[in-house]
Length: 287
Ligand SMILES: [Zn+2]
Image (tube, rainbow, N blue to C red; front, side, top):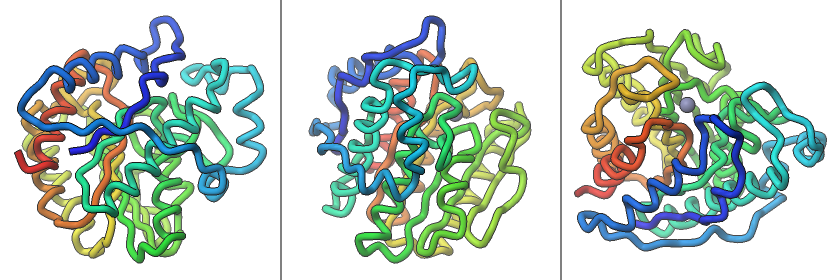
Protein backbone atom coordinates (compact mmCIF):
# COMPACT_ATOMS: atom_id res chain seq x y z
CA UNK A 1 0.00 0.00 0.00
CA UNK A 2 1.39 3.40 -0.99
CA UNK A 3 0.35 6.64 0.69
CA UNK A 4 1.24 9.91 -0.97
CA UNK A 5 1.55 12.83 1.38
CA UNK A 6 3.43 16.04 1.99
CA UNK A 7 3.45 17.25 5.57
CA UNK A 8 3.57 20.86 4.37
CA UNK A 9 -0.16 20.52 3.58
CA UNK A 10 -0.91 21.34 7.23
CA UNK A 11 0.50 24.83 6.65
CA UNK A 12 -2.75 26.82 6.36
CA UNK A 13 -5.86 27.08 8.53
CA UNK A 14 -8.79 29.23 9.66
CA UNK A 15 -9.62 29.22 13.39
CA UNK A 16 -12.54 26.89 14.15
CA UNK A 17 -12.80 25.61 10.56
CA UNK A 18 -13.68 21.87 10.31
CA UNK A 19 -11.19 21.36 7.44
CA UNK A 20 -8.24 21.68 9.80
CA UNK A 21 -4.58 20.61 9.78
CA UNK A 22 -5.21 18.11 12.59
CA UNK A 23 -7.12 15.93 10.10
CA UNK A 24 -3.86 15.13 8.36
CA UNK A 25 -1.67 15.22 11.48
CA UNK A 26 -3.89 12.72 13.32
CA UNK A 27 -4.14 10.45 10.28
CA UNK A 28 -0.35 10.49 9.81
CA UNK A 29 0.20 9.61 13.44
CA UNK A 30 -2.27 6.73 13.31
CA UNK A 31 -1.03 5.32 10.01
CA UNK A 32 2.64 5.56 11.00
CA UNK A 33 2.14 3.89 14.37
CA UNK A 34 -0.07 1.00 13.25
CA UNK A 35 1.42 -2.35 12.30
CA UNK A 36 -1.47 -4.11 10.52
CA UNK A 37 -1.04 -2.51 7.12
CA UNK A 38 2.45 -2.20 5.59
CA UNK A 39 2.78 1.29 4.10
CA UNK A 40 5.27 2.78 1.69
CA UNK A 41 5.34 6.58 1.98
CA UNK A 42 5.65 8.61 -1.22
CA UNK A 43 5.99 12.35 -1.90
CA UNK A 44 3.95 14.10 -4.61
CA UNK A 45 5.56 14.65 -8.00
CA UNK A 46 6.14 18.28 -9.07
CA UNK A 47 2.88 20.12 -9.98
CA UNK A 48 1.70 19.75 -13.59
CA UNK A 49 0.06 22.97 -14.75
CA UNK A 50 -0.84 21.55 -18.15
CA UNK A 51 -3.06 18.98 -16.45
CA UNK A 52 -4.60 21.64 -14.19
CA UNK A 53 -5.51 23.79 -17.21
CA UNK A 54 -7.65 21.00 -18.68
CA UNK A 55 -10.05 21.41 -15.75
CA UNK A 56 -9.81 25.08 -14.75
CA UNK A 57 -9.94 28.45 -16.48
CA UNK A 58 -6.97 30.82 -16.57
CA UNK A 59 -9.16 33.35 -14.71
CA UNK A 60 -9.69 30.87 -11.90
CA UNK A 61 -5.98 30.17 -11.57
CA UNK A 62 -5.31 33.92 -11.40
CA UNK A 63 -8.13 34.42 -8.87
CA UNK A 64 -6.56 31.90 -6.47
CA UNK A 65 -3.69 34.36 -5.99
CA UNK A 66 -5.92 37.36 -5.12
CA UNK A 67 -6.14 37.78 -1.35
CA UNK A 68 -9.92 37.80 -0.86
CA UNK A 69 -12.04 35.02 0.60
CA UNK A 70 -13.91 32.92 -1.98
CA UNK A 71 -17.02 32.38 0.13
CA UNK A 72 -17.95 32.11 3.81
CA UNK A 73 -16.58 28.53 3.99
CA UNK A 74 -13.65 28.90 1.67
CA UNK A 75 -11.07 31.40 2.82
CA UNK A 76 -8.18 32.87 0.94
CA UNK A 77 -4.91 31.77 2.59
CA UNK A 78 -1.44 32.90 1.72
CA UNK A 79 -0.04 30.48 -0.91
CA UNK A 80 -3.36 28.61 -1.15
CA UNK A 81 -2.83 28.16 -4.91
CA UNK A 82 0.41 26.31 -4.14
CA UNK A 83 -1.19 24.14 -1.45
CA UNK A 84 -3.92 23.22 -3.94
CA UNK A 85 -1.34 22.52 -6.68
CA UNK A 86 0.48 20.14 -4.32
CA UNK A 87 -2.78 18.32 -3.65
CA UNK A 88 -3.23 17.98 -7.44
CA UNK A 89 0.37 16.80 -7.77
CA UNK A 90 -0.31 14.06 -5.22
CA UNK A 91 -3.42 13.01 -7.18
CA UNK A 92 -1.38 12.74 -10.38
CA UNK A 93 1.26 10.70 -8.56
CA UNK A 94 -1.55 8.46 -7.28
CA UNK A 95 -2.74 7.98 -10.87
CA UNK A 96 0.78 6.95 -11.86
CA UNK A 97 1.02 4.46 -8.98
CA UNK A 98 -2.39 2.96 -9.84
CA UNK A 99 -1.25 2.43 -13.41
CA UNK A 100 1.82 0.64 -12.07
CA UNK A 101 -0.49 -1.78 -10.24
CA UNK A 102 -0.14 -0.27 -6.76
CA UNK A 103 -2.86 0.22 -4.18
CA UNK A 104 -2.59 3.93 -3.42
CA UNK A 105 -4.13 6.70 -1.34
CA UNK A 106 -3.41 10.42 -1.41
CA UNK A 107 -3.49 11.88 2.09
CA UNK A 108 -3.52 15.59 1.36
CA UNK A 109 -5.48 18.81 1.82
CA UNK A 110 -7.13 20.90 0.52
CA UNK A 111 -9.82 18.58 -0.84
CA UNK A 112 -11.08 19.24 -4.38
CA UNK A 113 -14.45 17.84 -5.41
CA UNK A 114 -16.48 21.07 -4.98
CA UNK A 115 -14.13 23.23 -7.08
CA UNK A 116 -15.62 23.97 -10.51
CA UNK A 117 -13.83 25.19 -13.66
CA UNK A 118 -13.96 28.76 -12.42
CA UNK A 119 -14.85 28.73 -8.75
CA UNK A 120 -13.34 27.76 -5.39
CA UNK A 121 -16.02 26.64 -2.93
CA UNK A 122 -16.75 24.20 -0.12
CA UNK A 123 -13.14 24.14 1.22
CA UNK A 124 -11.93 23.24 -2.33
CA UNK A 125 -9.74 25.27 -4.70
CA UNK A 126 -8.58 22.92 -7.49
CA UNK A 127 -10.43 19.76 -8.42
CA UNK A 128 -7.74 17.12 -8.02
CA UNK A 129 -9.90 14.12 -8.93
CA UNK A 130 -11.27 15.70 -12.12
CA UNK A 131 -7.78 16.84 -13.13
CA UNK A 132 -6.45 13.31 -12.61
CA UNK A 133 -9.37 11.77 -14.53
CA UNK A 134 -8.79 14.09 -17.51
CA UNK A 135 -5.05 13.41 -17.36
CA UNK A 136 -5.87 9.69 -17.48
CA UNK A 137 -8.06 9.98 -20.59
CA UNK A 138 -5.52 12.31 -22.24
CA UNK A 139 -2.85 9.67 -21.74
CA UNK A 140 -4.57 6.53 -22.93
CA UNK A 141 -7.31 5.50 -20.49
CA UNK A 142 -10.48 4.54 -22.37
CA UNK A 143 -13.07 4.51 -19.56
CA UNK A 144 -12.36 6.28 -16.29
CA UNK A 145 -14.94 5.92 -13.55
CA UNK A 146 -14.89 8.54 -10.79
CA UNK A 147 -16.65 7.26 -7.69
CA UNK A 148 -17.34 9.88 -5.03
CA UNK A 149 -18.51 8.61 -1.64
CA UNK A 150 -17.99 11.86 0.24
CA UNK A 151 -21.30 12.73 1.94
CA UNK A 152 -21.53 15.94 -0.09
CA UNK A 153 -22.36 16.05 -3.80
CA UNK A 154 -19.24 16.37 -5.96
CA UNK A 155 -20.69 19.30 -7.88
CA UNK A 156 -17.33 20.51 -9.15
CA UNK A 157 -16.30 17.11 -10.48
CA UNK A 158 -19.69 16.79 -12.17
CA UNK A 159 -19.36 20.24 -13.77
CA UNK A 160 -15.87 19.49 -15.10
CA UNK A 161 -16.50 15.92 -16.30
CA UNK A 162 -19.98 16.52 -17.73
CA UNK A 163 -20.11 14.73 -21.11
CA UNK A 164 -16.31 14.43 -21.24
CA UNK A 165 -15.62 11.40 -23.45
CA UNK A 166 -14.22 8.38 -21.64
CA UNK A 167 -15.31 9.50 -18.18
CA UNK A 168 -18.26 8.78 -15.93
CA UNK A 169 -19.04 10.23 -12.52
CA UNK A 170 -20.93 8.53 -9.68
CA UNK A 171 -21.74 10.51 -6.53
CA UNK A 172 -23.47 9.11 -3.46
CA UNK A 173 -24.35 11.91 -1.06
CA UNK A 174 -26.76 13.28 1.51
CA UNK A 175 -29.57 15.45 0.16
CA UNK A 176 -30.66 17.96 1.36
CA UNK A 177 -27.16 19.04 2.28
CA UNK A 178 -24.37 21.30 1.01
CA UNK A 179 -24.03 22.23 -1.88
CA UNK A 180 -27.70 21.50 -2.68
CA UNK A 181 -27.11 19.84 -6.06
CA UNK A 182 -27.00 16.21 -7.20
CA UNK A 183 -30.70 15.34 -7.11
CA UNK A 184 -30.79 13.81 -10.61
CA UNK A 185 -28.47 12.39 -13.25
CA UNK A 186 -26.92 14.97 -15.56
CA UNK A 187 -25.78 14.64 -19.18
CA UNK A 188 -24.73 11.26 -20.51
CA UNK A 189 -22.17 10.42 -17.86
CA UNK A 190 -22.99 11.89 -14.43
CA UNK A 191 -24.98 9.68 -12.06
CA UNK A 192 -26.27 10.92 -8.73
CA UNK A 193 -27.52 8.92 -5.75
CA UNK A 194 -29.05 11.32 -3.23
CA UNK A 195 -29.73 9.87 0.22
CA UNK A 196 -32.01 11.47 2.84
CA UNK A 197 -30.45 12.65 6.11
CA UNK A 198 -30.45 10.04 8.92
CA UNK A 199 -30.87 7.14 6.48
CA UNK A 200 -30.11 3.88 8.38
CA UNK A 201 -26.70 2.52 7.51
CA UNK A 202 -28.05 -0.69 5.93
CA UNK A 203 -30.08 1.43 3.51
CA UNK A 204 -27.10 3.73 2.87
CA UNK A 205 -24.97 0.68 2.03
CA UNK A 206 -27.63 -0.49 -0.42
CA UNK A 207 -27.34 2.83 -2.26
CA UNK A 208 -23.55 2.52 -2.31
CA UNK A 209 -23.93 -1.04 -3.67
CA UNK A 210 -26.28 0.19 -6.41
CA UNK A 211 -23.82 2.89 -7.43
CA UNK A 212 -21.01 0.30 -7.44
CA UNK A 213 -23.08 -1.90 -9.76
CA UNK A 214 -23.52 1.03 -12.12
CA UNK A 215 -19.79 1.72 -11.99
CA UNK A 216 -19.15 -1.95 -12.81
CA UNK A 217 -21.50 -1.82 -15.81
CA UNK A 218 -19.40 0.95 -17.29
CA UNK A 219 -16.47 -1.53 -17.41
CA UNK A 220 -13.91 1.06 -16.30
CA UNK A 221 -10.25 0.47 -17.08
CA UNK A 222 -9.36 2.87 -14.26
CA UNK A 223 -11.23 4.03 -11.15
CA UNK A 224 -10.61 7.28 -9.27
CA UNK A 225 -12.11 7.61 -5.82
CA UNK A 226 -13.14 10.80 -4.11
CA UNK A 227 -12.74 9.33 -0.66
CA UNK A 228 -14.67 11.42 1.83
CA UNK A 229 -15.38 10.04 5.29
CA UNK A 230 -18.13 12.45 6.33
CA UNK A 231 -21.04 9.99 5.86
CA UNK A 232 -19.76 8.65 9.21
CA UNK A 233 -22.33 8.63 12.01
CA UNK A 234 -20.31 10.93 14.26
CA UNK A 235 -19.25 13.43 11.61
CA UNK A 236 -20.02 16.95 12.86
CA UNK A 237 -21.14 18.48 9.55
CA UNK A 238 -23.54 15.90 8.04
CA UNK A 239 -26.33 13.65 9.28
CA UNK A 240 -25.60 10.16 7.98
CA UNK A 241 -25.03 6.90 9.76
CA UNK A 242 -22.09 4.88 8.42
CA UNK A 243 -19.83 3.10 10.91
CA UNK A 244 -16.12 2.32 10.65
CA UNK A 245 -16.81 -1.19 9.32
CA UNK A 246 -18.90 0.23 6.47
CA UNK A 247 -15.82 1.99 5.11
CA UNK A 248 -13.92 -1.30 5.34
CA UNK A 249 -16.73 -3.03 3.45
CA UNK A 250 -16.73 -0.30 0.80
CA UNK A 251 -12.97 -0.71 0.33
CA UNK A 252 -13.42 -4.46 -0.11
CA UNK A 253 -16.20 -4.01 -2.65
CA UNK A 254 -14.09 -1.56 -4.66
CA UNK A 255 -11.16 -3.97 -4.57
CA UNK A 256 -13.41 -6.66 -6.08
CA UNK A 257 -13.71 -4.54 -9.24
CA UNK A 258 -10.18 -5.72 -9.99
CA UNK A 259 -9.19 -2.59 -11.95
CA UNK A 260 -6.39 -0.08 -11.28
CA UNK A 261 -7.69 2.37 -8.73
CA UNK A 262 -6.51 5.36 -6.72
CA UNK A 263 -8.11 7.22 -3.82
CA UNK A 264 -7.90 10.87 -2.85
CA UNK A 265 -8.92 12.19 0.55
CA UNK A 266 -11.85 14.61 0.30
CA UNK A 267 -13.89 15.34 3.47
CA UNK A 268 -14.24 13.69 6.86
CA UNK A 269 -14.25 15.93 9.92
CA UNK A 270 -14.71 13.74 12.97
CA UNK A 271 -11.85 12.94 15.34
CA UNK A 272 -12.24 9.31 14.21
CA UNK A 273 -11.05 10.16 10.69
CA UNK A 274 -7.75 8.23 11.13
CA UNK A 275 -9.62 5.01 12.04
CA UNK A 276 -12.01 5.46 9.12
CA UNK A 277 -9.15 5.93 6.66
CA UNK A 278 -7.33 2.90 8.04
CA UNK A 279 -10.46 0.74 7.82
CA UNK A 280 -10.99 1.81 4.22
CA UNK A 281 -7.35 1.19 3.29
CA UNK A 282 -7.47 -2.28 4.81
CA UNK A 283 -10.52 -2.96 2.65
CA UNK A 284 -8.95 -1.76 -0.61
CA UNK A 285 -5.70 -3.58 0.08
CA UNK A 286 -7.40 -6.85 0.94
CA UNK A 287 -6.45 -7.06 4.60
ZN1 LIG B 1 -17.85 16.27 2.28
